[in-house]
Image 1 (tube, helix red, strand yellow):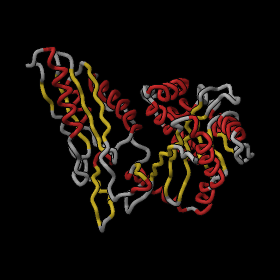
Image 2 (cartoon, rainbow, N blue to C red):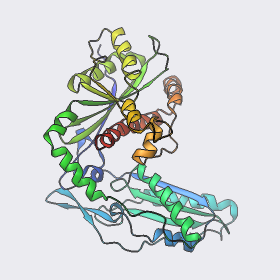
Image 3 (cartoon, rainbow, N blue to C red):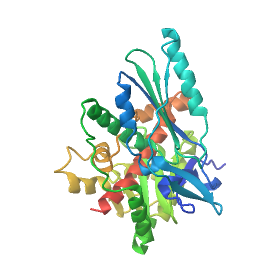
Length: 377
């Protein structure tokens, strides 16, 4: 009996006038004109000066936060509105008994998160400020995923903190003017993708990252998740192959071998000395034909090291992400904890494999972004 592994596949691509970043991730097999609602929420509890926070919030918004999505001739179209003051509604919960405030706050946050957005009405985000005590507030922010992603939170935290501290001291904004805007990136992306040589080179690339049960290698090490990224036409497809049981390993490895046959140039980070050897060992054990040890392999760790070894404290992926891609991971599951999470999930379902999948997804996307960053040097 043939057993098929779980393959989670999502694609980022163009639809009408919307750019890849604006359209977001959609299920490739169930493509729709407009994406499903997807929320990212954040709250922080801290003492603050409300007037200063309002000044911080009143800065002109990035284009993405002044964007709404209209439909023209059945296609999504980005509409950018002019800058306008940002309202920060507030609610004082101090009239409630202290033990009830936290529950009341949670109830209000749940209601805000459940309220849908109308994509045709800007802004596609909400901000609220709740007062819990004399010096205790909760700031809430919720944005639709069509204008916001996980990386955006890092920018929000960093820049709000810098602006708040500056305004509190009576200083001007310490943030430098934006060197480029999303429109610049969009124009560059379209020009880059329109180049025939670039398209031909990308079509050969398979961005690959694995999660395994150990670092030692050998026949006892299982590759239980493989993240794959590849270009299909004008789409960047991210595919994750995940083992629900050991019985699915052969089918999963066959899926990876098939992708490598379609896209023969592996692009990894430290994969030349690790990922490909773990996969090759398992494929050989299952007597599968494969090209995992093909000399055509681009390990971005070595490229990054040559480019930035005298500039960065080290060239680990997290360091490169932070310093060169402007991306800081929050609450990321360390790779060393992934094996235990998977084994616990196999045993009794308690393992957080969702966090493993998110960690793996970010690794693959970082490979794509890093290749673009290195390619423009």
